[in-house]
Image (cartoon, rainbow over the protein chains, first blue to last red):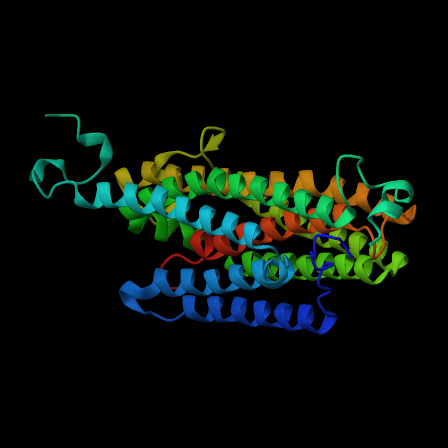
Length: 114
Length: 229
């Protein structure tokens, strides 16, 4: 035990690991099953939603973040936020092109021809 | 209260750390900082993927159908199993079962190798089908026939396969780097370096391996399961 009052690493039980493992396998099965169904516009959202749940399980239990320090949690939140900025802001740019001038629709390679 | 004793007795404790617990805390944060950097490294690749998938959705769907989703699903299962064995290696270190650390680490290496073996089979299939942009790309007629695409869409298919090889290749590279590291950690575990009082290298290697698993968890649906199968 440290003098700083840091708890010695929480030992995650084998049962927890096996439970998370089984959940991951079932979710993989659901991913494949869902790919065979047509949810229309929601297809990608369903696939990504399941992937996010799986990743969260891995991070919390396999990577011990549930029992880890706040600093590590902050680190992960920072990663997710910056990834969000990277993808959402860039995509909103591409999605909104053509709103002002119809000529700027379609592929990014064609926007220079004004 | 072991810090004074640790300073003198535990060989793994660096002199500038107060105690092993503090040292582990610092090492863990350092590893996570590296992994956050990796998230953004892969993130840029995922952004390029998202962009082109939106611009050429029908092409990406047709190309995705050319991949064997069964092999992708098998590899997903194999990688999740390897994450479990890695987690069990970390657990074995935490409870002091030293022989089990080595065995679970070797199981992880075995499963990682199975994953890479399946990847080789898949890449070979793309080589045969002449679907490797820049290296072995078939004629427009041939590729169009292979992917059920026509006209300009045939050339746009190169975007999908460039991203397929870029993303899966970068992922596979991470595994190729990870396997020797796990073997090295297994060797050190065999020498009896790790136990309940000190298992940080096993834990950090575990973090890296689980991260590689997470990347694949996203790659599988994004590359293999586009659209309605």
